[in-house]
Length: 598
Image 1 (cartoon, rainbow, N blue to C red):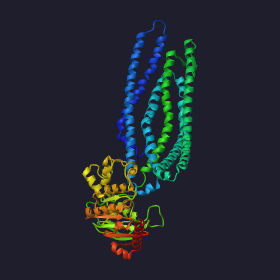
Image 2 (image 1 turned 180 degrees about the horizontal axis):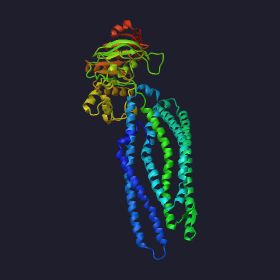
Image 3 (image 1 turned 45 degrees about the horizontal axis):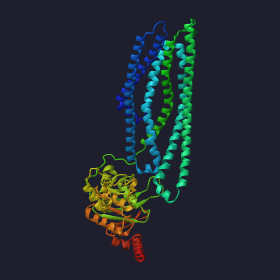
C-alpha cells in the first residue's frame, strides 16, 4: 500500500470503492480455483475404462460456463471500482497541486522551472494512479490468490507444493534486493525528464526568437543531446526492470518444467504400482490430479508475476509521491494573518510609508528605497522613470505577491499586511506589461473576471479600450480565437484587449503597466480620455514610457534607481525633476526628427 499524508485521506474517502473492488477480486480468485478441478475431472472421465460419461462432462461444461460468467462480471466490477478510485485519487491530487501552485508566491516560480512542474503534474501523477489502481489488483491477487492456491496445492501434495514455492521465496528475496536500486534509477529518469521538459518548453515559448536568429539547426542539435540523455536514463531503468522481470519469468518457467517433468514421472510411477516416496511421503497422483495441480500452479503464476511487478511499481510510485509531497510541502510565503481584514468597497487611497523592498534571493540590493508618498482616492497617477528604476516593482507590491514589512503600505489607511490577500487583489484591476492573453475567444478574454457578462458589457469595455472597431472587422468578431498568448492579434490589439479585460472589473484601483506603448498617439489619447471620463472618482495608476501619456495626469511620480525623485503635477515636474526634463526634451527632439523626415 502506498501511504503518505497527502494520499491517505483518499483511501478513507473512497473506502467503499476499494471495498467493492477488493471483494469482487477475492470472489473472482476463489471462483477461478474451480477451473483446474473441473479440467482434472474431465481428464479422469476421459481416461476411465468403459463408455465415456458424457453426462458428467456436460455438467462440468455448464459449471465452467457459470464460472466464466462470474469471472466476467467480477472483472467488470473490480475494473470499474478500483480504476475509478485510482483516477479520483489522481484527480484529487492534481486539484490539490493546482491550488497549491496558485497559493505559492512568485519567488517559488522564479526558482523552479516549468518543465519540472509539468513532469509532476503528468508522469508522477500517472505513476501514482497506476499503483493505486492496478497495483491494488496485484496486491490482492498476490496475497489472496496466492494463499488460496497454495492451500489447495498443499492439500493435494505438500512435497510437490514445496518445490513449486521455491520461486516465490526467491522472488521475495530478489525483490527486496532490487527495490531500492530501482527507486534510485526511477528518480534519475524523472529528473532527466524534467530537464527535457524544461528545454522543450523554453524552445516552444521562444520559437520566434529562434527563427529570427536562424538557430533552428543548433537548437535541434541541443535538443537531440538532451533527448539522448533522456534515452540513456530511460534505457538504464528499463534494463534493470527487464532483467528483474526476466529472472522472475525464468524462475517460474523452470519451476513449471520441474512440475511437469517430475509430475509425469510421479504419475507413471503411481499407475505402474511403484509410487515415489519423498521424505517418507508417498506421492499418489493420477493424470487428472496432475492436470489439476498444474492448473493450480498456472493460477499461481500471475500472483508470482504480480509480486515481482509490485517491486518496480512500488519503487516508482514512492519516488513520484515523494516528489509530489515535496511540492505540496513547499512553504507558502503569502498567507493571511490572523483576524485578517476583508476589504470591501475601498475608496482607492494608497499610502507608502518609508517603504523599501528587495526581491527574495537578492542580497545587498534594494529595488525600492524609502518610498514616502500618498495617492489620494480618485486620482489618476502617472509613473515614469528610466528602465530598471522600479516602476513595475512599485505597483506589483500592491497585489501582495511578496511579503512586505508591516506598517509600510496602506490601502485606505489599512495596513495591507493585515488584510485578506484575496480581498486586496479583488480591489485592484491590472493590465500587465506582457499583455498575456489566453488561447480563447476575444469575448472570453475580456470577460475573464466573470464569464457570465453579457456581450453588451464586453463591447462597452472594448470601446473603452478603443478596440471594438478592430474586433468588428474580424470575420468572427468577438468569437475570434486569439491563439496561444494572443498570437493572432497585433501588439496594439493585445494591449487594448488587456485594458478592456481590466476595465470591465470596475475595480476601485486600476493599474496599467506600460499598457499603451504599442498603440499610436491617437488611440492612446482616446484611451486616456476614456480613463478620465469613465473612471472619474476611481484611482488609476498608469506606468508610461512616453511623457505624452502622463501629461494630463493629476500627478506624476518620477522614480530614479528605486527612489522617489519627484511627485508633482506635470507642469511643476519640468522645474524640479531632471529625469522628467530629459524625457520631455528627448520626446520633443524625436517629434522634430519625425517632422523633418516627413
